[in-house]
Image (cartoon, rainbow, N blue to C red; front, side, top):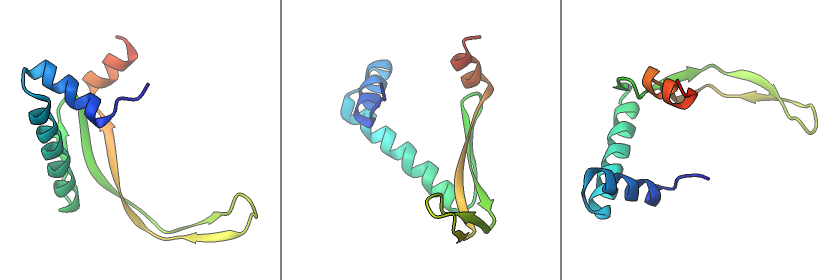
Length: 94
């Protein structure tokens, strides 16, 4: 089962004792702040939870899996999310 944005907002509202609309606003604010920070070239570190940063991928040659034809893949800047130690431990069950 996947947790949707509205499901997440509902759980946040319950946990924080706020309305679902307020939780949805907080979630949107978090998303836009992280996005703006990454676009500016900075990183976001939530100690124990996760780090959000950008990474540069160099140009390379790939293969079309259907035809085997070589294709050029251009360089790109991508978002990278790294889980923190507390999140890793919680998921692992330790």
